[in-house]
Length: 141
Image (cartoon, rainbow, N blue to C red; front, top):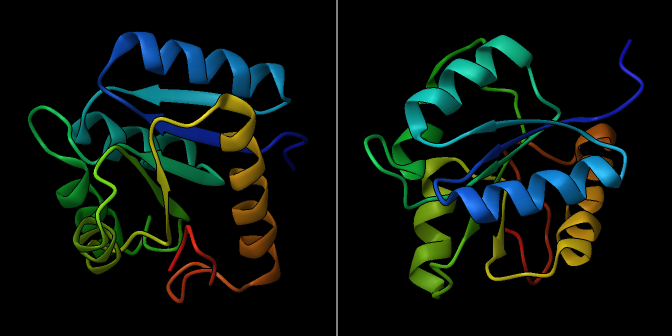
């Protein structure tokens, strides 16, 4: 049994990825990182994370398609996936929901705000209110 929640942070910008990773680790999480959708899928299968923070604009395989593929695979369909994206229009939120994201956090966001949001998603996932139905709040579905 794990003592720390495992977060898969999918972000193509190295500076943002490093900043969020360091803060998440400082906040007590175990963090795996990926820089594109292909790596995200591989690491999701390898690490079975408690939560995936998925950037949507990625090189190669984007976050929307990576999320669809994770949802289509029985080995990863159960994972909690939260979009972490600068695409913050209502249409982008809807597109992320249709791809299979359980929620949405708009960038830029302060690292502590990210931790607070993630903690809510992790609690909801443990309570069984996500994945698939999504948590109901202004920042999620």
